[in-house]
Length: 474
Image 1 (cartoon, rainbow, N blue to C red):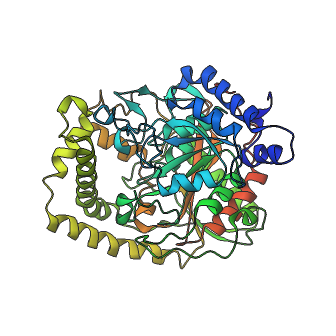
Image 2 (cartoon, one colour; image 1 turned 120 degrees about the horizontal axis):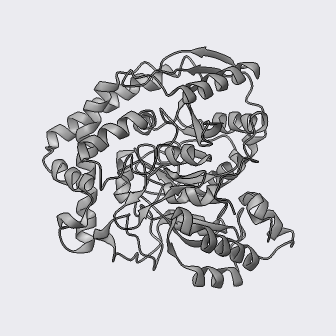
Image 3 (cartoon, one colour; image 1 turned 90 degrees about the vertical axis):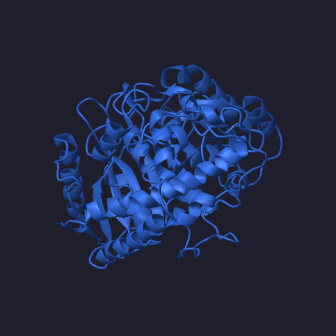
C-alpha cells in the first residue's frame, strides 16, 4: 500500500470494508514503516508482529476500525502476554497476564495491535528520554522532543507508522505530545473511558485514556467505541446526547470563547506561541464566535500547594502496587533520579496532608468549573514554547529539582483540567519558524466533548493541517 499513510484510521477501515485492501496488506504496510522509520525516532519499544499477522489473517470483530494497525502505550493498560515496562528498568521483566478492560474495547473496535509506544518512566515526565530505551525523537525535527508521557504513540502517528495510537493523560500526557507532534489529542471527561479492573489510579479522577490521531473524526469515533459505561466505575458515567463522530460535521454555532496569554508563573509566552494564539483567536472571531480575552481566574500557587501532597501520595500508592507485582523494592540504580526522589519524598506524606490537599483541590476546582458559566470554551496554548531540544528535560542528566522547574515552565496549562475533570483538546494550529508544531488547547464544560468536536471539525476545515508532513514520514 503505497498510500497507506495518507489515510486516517476511518479511511483505512473503509478501504477494508469496501474490499479495496485486505487487513494483512494494512498490517504489512504498517510493519514495513515501523521497521524502516523507527530507527530514526525510537517510538516503538515492543513489537509483536507475528501475533499481529495472525490476527490479520483470522476473523476480526466488525467494528469501526476493523483491520486498522494500532499501538498501545507502554504504561497504564495491560495486553495479555506483552511486557509492560512503564519505561522503567525496574519493570523490565514484567509481563501482563490478561487484557485490561480498555484493551478489550480496542479489540472490539477491530484494531490490530502491533506493539507498544514508548512512555516516560511511570508517566512522570512530559517527555520520553528513558534510561531503559533512550530518547524518543520528534518526527518534525529529530533534535527535539516528542513530548510525553505518551511520546512514543505520538511520534509513531506523526511519522505515519500507524494512523492512531493509545495514549493516557494524568497531567497533560495526551495533549503535550499531541502538541509537540502536530496531532489531535483529546483528554476526555473524567471516567468517560473506564479501564477496569486495572484503573486503580483512576479513582483519584485525574487520569484518563484515549488516543492521539491525525484527524478529528478518528478521535471522535474511537471515543464513541470506548467511552461506554462500565459497572464499578468510581464516578457517575458522564452523559452524552449522541455519537461524537456525528458532531464533527455539525456547526458549533456561535460560541462564547475566552482566551488568555497568561501563564501561571507570570512569565510571557514565547513570541511564536503567542503569535499562534492570537492568530487562533482572530480566526475564531472571523468564524463568527464571540471571542474575548479573559483569564481563567485561578490561583495557580494555591493549586500547586494543594495538588503536591495528593500527587505524591497517589504515586507512592501506585508504586506500592508495582513493587508488589515485581516482588521486591527497587534499587536506586533501577529508577531514574526524578523517580527515585519522587518515591522517597512521597513516602513521607501523611494521610492528613494527602486528604487536606485533595479537599482543597476539589474546592479550588469548583471555582474553575463555575467560570464556564460565563463562556463555552476556554482557549490557551498547550505549552509556553515550541518543543525544546532533546536533553532539556532528560531525567538522567537534569537534577530532579531543575527538571521539576523546567516542566512547570514548559507545560503549565494542561494539568488544571485533569483536576476539574473537564474535556480538553489539543489541535495542531500553528508551526514555528523551525518547522515544529505548536498546539492550541480548547477546554469545554464538564462532559461537553460534543462542543469541542464540533469546534475542532470547523477548525480542521478552516485551518487545515492534514497536508503537513514531518521530516520523518512514511
